[in-house]
Image (cartoon, rainbow, N blue to C red; front, side, top):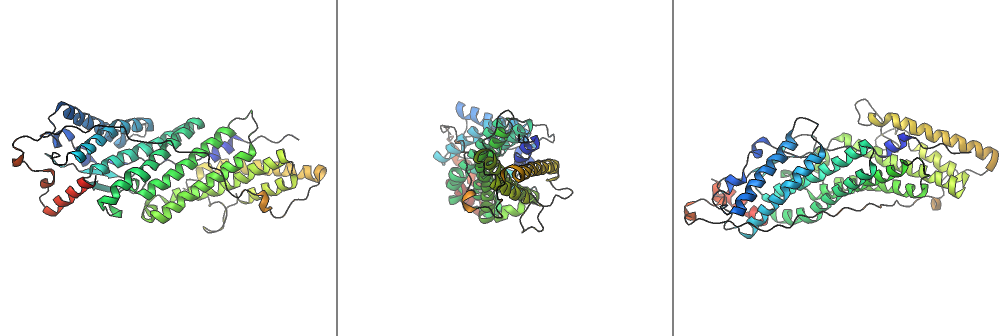
Length: 427
């Protein structure tokens, strides 16, 4: 008999994602000005132009992030970050190669709040590298937001591309930008937002690659006029689950403090997705064995196991899906989950009926090890991210520079001045 087609709910369920907020810049920090801070040494035309552009583009980013309206598209935030990042990168490079000329008329104090952490807390730093890192992180989180928006609209192919880009941003932060700063700066673990930590970025790289693969699977399932390659989907589904497990493992082992600050509902969703994707992998594999391998007994056993995995667990440590309670983020997927369960039960009943009347194959009580997937497949790779090449700006010291305070001397406290200079050197 013809197999019941998979429902649209299956596509929606397998592509479920949770958006994170973008980082934000505090009100006081939003008013800083590169033009004013570099007024004396930034008299060259190219320097004045860059500092002015930096102020303009930073203000645009601030407004994009601080808007009370939820209507600011993630694409707008991505664009704002991309406009500003080359500016701060060029200013940072300038101060690195001309530290003796990098004298400030006013202190630059950068203050950001994490978008990944549940509670808003402000983190201050005078390091230009901190500002660059948070601007890049903003681009990454906002790019993932674009992917979520594309997913919601049903364009899973576009969503997949965006999540691979977001994974590339996090990979760059984890392996390039952050190590070369944090190893020298001596910044304490509690003094930085989640986005400015190596472990967090490494974990979100794994997460975004897993979500990108969700979008790839949804793309295949969305083509109702074509029979999916069930065997490949089984490998991809298990690969998604493994990526999410890697995300949780990295956060727990490398950034336990960050884990306590992320909304617990997110980890409930992670547990749900890990178990769901394992179940769907078995469902896809069962259909492969029934439709392609014609191993009817094994297909029935495998689909039965997939359904068992979709049962609500008895406790947080037992197997199964988390309980969907009132106020849980899982309420949004409850209806689709019920539809998918009914779909699986319908197929199982159909298979069992055909096997009892036509095929008469023995249904194994336990799935043979050699028939199960030992590991999943990850097809997704990060889209490489790199900073735009920039040249240092000319900073010109006036003849009376001896009468001016250097950047480090703006601090009234000598110890703080020494710390600021060490940060500049570390950058």
